[in-house]
Length: 479
Ligand code: SF4
Image (cartoon, rainbow, N blue to C red; front, side, top):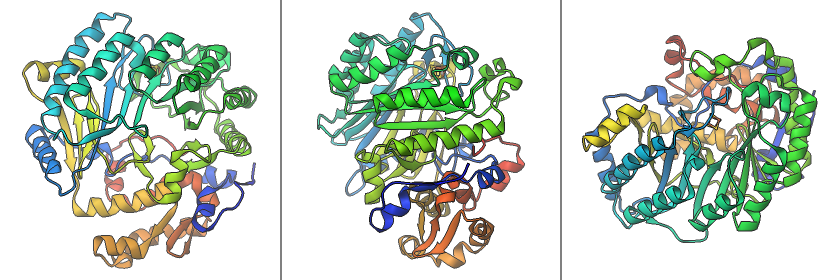
């Protein structure tokens, strides 16, 4: 399948951003694994030499900036009542609600301790509840959690705050959804993956179409101003026909955003995936067709390709941020407010404060143990070097805008760009030759055929990748 897919041309930079061309031959040739660059350096570089004292120092320093950054909070709720076999999230499968009570007891304690590190005049503009399944908690538990956050942090009450929550359409009722809006959430994302019953059986996630569509409709009626839907291609037993119907069904509800991920089968890393039979997996040919179909349908429906799996309606903030140069890549994919300091709360959560990443302990016993001893549950972290900061800037430009500005990057970091990145630019040459990008003002421009292969271009600037690959670390594939 080949074809130029582009929105109606707009001026200059925007037009370049919105073109994406699905070139099957090229995609097939570049179907190699690599990081998704939700951070740079990636979590593989986090080290246990960065612990509580280092985190405290970073947090305190962040308060002392002449204009301290406002805050974003990520709250991880790890529980799910059944395992979806494709899942690679950090989660605990249980139907025992008492486990949530034990967790919340510690999470409330962590909120108290973390909030002591940050000045109260730093407003929380962004809040995200992820999991796991945040709605494993009852409405009352979520309300108390929000109250607790409000007691210890200054939560924005401004209409443009972004307070979002991940929903599981299999379990959430209209009343719960209304409660979530009432306690302050104004954005939600729903896992759909595929409506095909055969696929749903194969991945152990049976979810009704009417319930899902009702949820999207009601979210709008109750006042949520953004609804995002997650789909996955490459799942077992998936067919082009079935996925086409799924896309049509979801498109009929016109969510504001789509995240469409390629399934990464890494059963050695994610145990539930062992339940998936390799012979049931979509073939590379089917995966390519599913991806091509997705791009085609979303394009025809008027969605803009943001980059790396993400699509949004033209009036969505992500599209506007991309146009205005304020888009950031972060742990949730893309964000309009990457300038905020991110505080991670809950087991395994990751934060980013100043130029440091901080990850919490990854298992419940470790997480509980630290908090019960009165310690912050810091597992590991990383403080970026000057070189990391320069490379992160370059990788962000590629992942967010598909344009790398040599002169502006050189000015920001006081480097001679061509000298500093001589070997990286040489590594880009074959990709330029293949049509993924071109040498053009202001430096490198990703071409329509390269928009689906952004991570390959970014990988050329990743100083750690050769070592990480040599160590046997596995990443998902590009397609
Ligand atoms: S996909 Fe979501 S609901 Fe399913 S097991 Fe993973 S975290 Fe839980």
